[in-house]
Image (cartoon, rainbow over all chains, first blue to last red; front, side, top):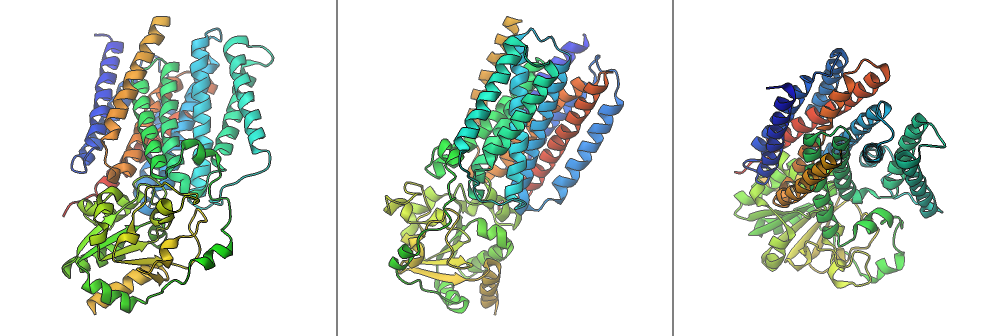
Length: 461
Length: 92
C-alpha cells in the first residue's frame, strides 16, 4: 500500500472519531470518553500527517509542536473555571491565526491563475484573521483588560461599509484580475483588512452578549479550518472544520433565542450602551424590602423547596462553593433544592453549569427555565444570586421593555424571592428590574459569597 | 480539478448537516465543554500547518511553524481543559 492511501484511510478513521466523540458529548455520563476519543482521532491525524513524504525538515515542526503543546498544557491545567470564557475565546483565536498562516503559506507558492484555489485561500485568510483579532478583543473584554461596555462611535456604519467594500475589492483582484498590486501586497493587505474587521466586529458588542460572540467565533474558527481544507484539498480538515462550524452556529442560535433577539441585533445594536435608565422610572416602582441574613435564614429553614438561580454575579463573587454548601445544608434540612440555569447566564454557554460542577453540585439538580417555570408557584424560596436580566418580569409583562419577549426564569411566581445583590445598580442591559419591588421579594444586599457564607453559618450554628 | 472541488463541497455539506444533528442533542449543561471540545477539533488545521511547514523555503518554514505552534496550543489546551471540566460533572 502506498503512503497516501494509508494517510487517507487514517483521516477517515480520525473523522469517525471526531463524529462519535461529539455524539458522546450528548450525555454527561459518556462525555469524558467522547472527548478522549476525539483527541485520539486528532493524535492519529497528526501522526499520520508527519509521515508525509513532502516534509523535508522535521526540526521546526517538532520544535513548534513541543512549544505549542507546553503552552496549551499549562494554560489548560492552570486556568480557573471562572476564567473559562476568556480561555475558550483565546483558543478560538489561536485556531483562527493558525488557519490564516496555513492559507498564507500556501498562497506564496501556488499558481495565481486558479480562481477556485485563490477563493479558498482568500476565505481562509479572511475568516482566520477575523477570528484571531475578534477573539483577542473578546478575550480583552471578558478578562476586563478592555472595557466590557459596547463601543460605539459616529460613522460606525460608514467605516464598516467602507471596510467591507475594500475586502470585496481585494478579493476580486486576488481571484480574477491580479493587477494593481503585487501578490505579496495583496496578501498583506487582505490580512490587515481582516484584522481590522475582527476588531471592529467585536468592539461594539457588550460584555453580557459575549456568549453569542464566543459561540460565533467558535464557529468561525471551524470554518477557517474548513476553508484551509479546501486550500490543501484535505478531507479531514473539511469534515472537522464543518462539524465545529455547525456546532458554533447552533450555539449562537440557542443564545439568540434565549434572549429573544436576532443575531444582527446582538452584533450591531450596541445593546446596553445606554448608561442607565432615567431615575423617574425607579421612583415609580415603590420601595424595595431589604432583609438581613438572620431573617432570611428563618425563612429558608422553614422552606421545603428552594430554587437557586445563579448568574454572572455568582462567578464574580466566586460564591459557587459557598452556594453548594448552603444547598447541601438545605437538603439535610429536608428541603428539595434545584438550580435553575438560564441559557445566557454567565459569559459563555453553559458557564454556570461548569462552575457548579466544579463546586461538586450534582448535574441532575441543574434544571432549565422551561422545567421550573410551570411549577414555580410550588417553590417556597427562590434565591437569585448575581442574576438580573434573566429574572426580569418586564420580559413578559412590559411590552415597552427592551428585553420584552425574552424567555425568563419566572421567580416572581414563587412564594418568596431572595435577591442577592451588591447594590441597587441596574443589570447589564441598564434596565430596571421590577422584580426587586414586588411584595414577595426581599433584598439581601452585600457580597454574594459573604451573604451565602453567613447563611451557611446560621444553619450550622 | 472541478470534479474534485464538487466532491469536497459534497463532503462539506454532509458534514454540516451531520454536525447540526449531533450538536442539537447536546444538553445545555454541557455547552461549555462542547465549545472547548469543538474548539480543540478546530485545531485540525494543525494537519495543514504540518504539511505546509515541511519545506526548505525560509518564509514557508516561518509561516508553517508559527501555524503549528498556534494550532498545537489550540489542540492540546482545548482537549485538556475539556477533559478537566468534564471530570467535574458528577452525579450523586
